[in-house]
Amino acid sequence: KAGVTQTPRYLIKTRGQQVTLSCSPISGHRSVSWYQQTPGQGLQFLFEYFSETQRNKGNFPGRFSGRQFSNSRSEMNVSTLELGDSALYLCASSLEASQFFGPGTRLTVL
Amino acid sequence: AQSVTQLGSHVSVSEGALVLLRCNYSSSVPPYLFWYVQYPNQGLQLLLKYTSAATLVKGINGFEAEFKKSETSFHLTKPSAHMSDAAEYFCAVSEGSGGSNYKLTFGKGTLLTVNP
Image (cartoon, rainbow over all chains, first blue to last red):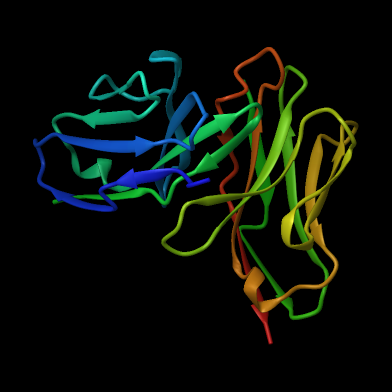
């Protein structure tokens, strides 16, 4: 089976812009979670989607949003980018108790 | 609320030596526990997981971990380190069955260096 894929792998934006990241889960996995990884804060949970519904949400401002499509693919959007949003954004798809991560999207905000 | 503490942000061992990475957790409900490894510029790879079955869990690449409820610990071990084990290791906890078992809380990570 193919693993979790994330596009794009690298992204450079400027402050104030918005960005959309995409995640395709492993075939058959219906849950998709998003995490932000930074050197200062480590790995932090953003949100989780299951069958197109947000089930869990982390402690991030409303500028961070997401959605899931009927084929389980997911997107996350960050509006009005800030310098502090520079991070590795990781997507994970889940089967039972195990989460399998993609390679991440490296976002740099200038 | 759940939390994870990884003791030692950096551990250095010699090739062939025992690897011991420490993880303590806090959870108000029976937890699920995980160890992940991250190589540079890559995502996280699941090494092993504890989901309330056997307390000694065996994972990939010769790693294993033991769940000790009385000590709220889930330390990761490998009998003999290999150069390819050099990476960053993350311990994580979720709320387990019936709870938010898709929300992982991670520790800060331990960078493992293996010296020849």
